[in-house]
Amino acid sequence: MKYQFVRAAAVSPELKVADVFFNTQNIIREVEVQSNQGIEVLVFPELSLCGFTCGDLLLQKSLTDACLNALTEIAAATKGKRMLVFVGLPVVAQNKLYNCAAGIANGNVLGIVPQMNSGNCRERRFFAKGFSEVTYLSLSDYTLVPMSGSIIFTDEKSGVGVACEIGDESGSAVPPSVIHSQAGASIIVNLSAQSESADRCEVRKTVLSAQSVRNVCAYLCAEAGAGESTSDAVYSGSHLIYENGELLSEAAPFSGEAAVAEIDVGFLLNERMRLNFGQQILCNGADGRGSGFTVCTAFIGDGELTLRKVSKLPFVPDGEHSGKQSELMLSVQANALAQRLKYTNSRTAVLGVSGGLDSALALLVTARAFDLLGKPRKNIIAVTMPGFGTTSDTKNNSLRLIQETGAVLREIGISKTVLSHFHDVGHDPEVHDAAYENAQARYRTMVLMDLANAEQGLVVGTGDLSELALGWCTYNGDHMSMYSVNGSVPKTLVKHLVSYEGLRLGGELGAVLQRIVNTDISPELLPPDGKGNIAQKTETLVGPYELHDFFLYRMLRCGDAPRKIYALACYAFCGSYDGNTIKKWLLYFYRRFFAQQFKRNCMPDGVKVSGVSLSPRGDWRMPSDASAAVWIEETEKL
Image (cartoon, rainbow, N blue to C red; front, side, top):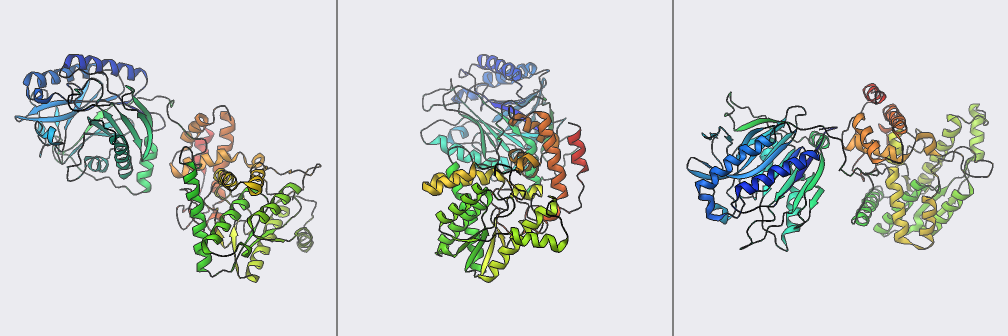
């Protein structure tokens, strides 16, 4: 397991009902194939050694004995392979028949787990419920764990816990997945044999997705497939792998394919910590019988990441539901602002509009908020404040945007007043340093604040999450507002939402929004170049926002360490940035993220939109003088 990823697969090889020898050879062949593919956890369907549809043949001693003998043969085939394998078989103990799953690794049968609930009516004809106490099979000393317990197969190197359950166990008082996850399993596998029907596929997905979210785990389901009897039903071999609600891999019904995915166990463990998802501390007796929770050691490999999709833009909605998610995000922003305007009894909203992405999104959100409140958009005061670095393109875009949204334009030039301020504080205006830049940003904020006081208004902040993470904002300048609608929206998402609104609205407003999207990101605090174009390009100075947003997401949302973030960035941005470039900006990210916490500790109120927030009152509490040494040292060694 590398960087806390586990490669897992669910398969259903061709099967012949009651032909244990045929099924065993196919399983052994599949173990070999999947081992060569680097699979570390491999799951076969329910009763995969004999077939789920054996009927009364399950009561035949010849069949059950053959399955136990086959289990030993399959175990031998795993010798030297760094993988954990689950197969299903019927087991007789105490003159009762149990529907079981066996966990196998490195030549050993680690344990046999019975179905806790005896399934549907058809299954109850044959199978007893799980045990009330630990029982040992005299045949081979395979362990059967009790109905109230859980068997956890733990990788000795990484500590990753894997547990299994069988079929539909919804009849249990407490679902097995809850017991497993509370006992420490971050991966739960299900050996299943549900018959296929037209309405069952989507229901199955909904149930398994919910299971993985509820238990903050990965959930693998291997369904019975080709070869099962079709006398009364058909079995499709539809396999699914979920990770905390997200579908990682699916083998479509009747495709005969395997579902294969790389599970981010590190993310799951961090998410459990973040949610305070408590693991029960349950002690075994000296012989493992005390509580019924048995820990068996497995071996998981150390393969490279090759299968998993790692998004370059993790904050940006993608796929068929992208539009719906974008609309929801904009609605969250607009409704939050509407509530704040209503609570403060503000007659107007005041915001600076520069012709850039952030202020464009803030103006669009403000317009939505006024529509929600039934207030006229003419009560939105949009202020353009040209200064030393303002270019004609951005100014024209801002003017056109204000006009098209129906807000009221106020143009207030700042150059004359800022020059007077330089004289007052003794600063040479030819020295283009931090004082030169920040004086402009602070004066613009003062204009907005005073104008809001005069117009019974509320200053809407425009700064975004990426700027807060890097501290790329002027303290008590654009850093401050009366309510920040973009405070948890990273730059890549700001760009996406502005594009979305441009496409949705169309016309001249859509055209100006597209021009804004295509404009270089800049604070425009330094004079333009000789041709009147933007000279101060933010991403040249602080690095690509798509990289910084990737770093931010992996650090805050997933809890990844620098080594893992670097590896995933190299994987996701292959062909866009080389390793040295990624390392350079990752170091820059950590240095600025830690050094600029003081700005975040006094940031204004703002709604959480993207799933990540740096608000000191909400998601992120960190002292301003925390050291970045641990993170810097690990990054420098890459």
